[in-house]
Figure 1 (cartoon, helix red, strand yellow):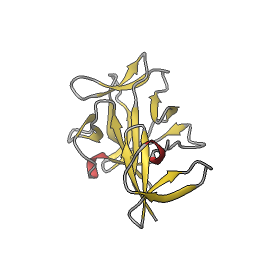
Figure 2 (figure 1 turned 180 degrees about the horizontal axis):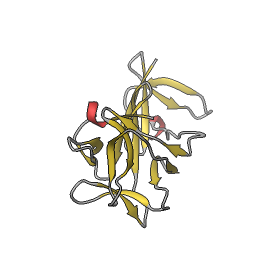
Figure 3 (figure 1 turned 45 degrees about the vertical axis):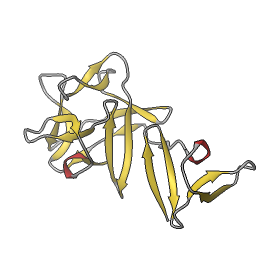
Length: 160
């Protein structure tokens, strides 16, 4: 019935009539707008989802044994915490440290301060995760979780 347009911290909903859903002055929602403005932008927040387990095309996401990086091709999974922050999410590891994307594109798990990640639900049960750097998380050929994907494709879609 609706297409979701991902706008970073906000989303816009386009109805099957080609118009955008907006909030009217009385609080009513109506699909009557031709373009996206402030009244057509909404915050999408997951309710009752405090944990995150990810599985990609090559396996589960799990801590790498001897480093601060993540593997994306394991047969077992790790459980991560999700913290909502104004349209974005912070992902926390079991060590109470935050995920971040390093300058080389590696997703690391030892951050002292949170970094924003954006969830884009593109298929039923599958999500693309975009880092603060504007690139998507993906599993590389060696099984390492990277934050350098240019678009959502099979390597950057995660079952949640």
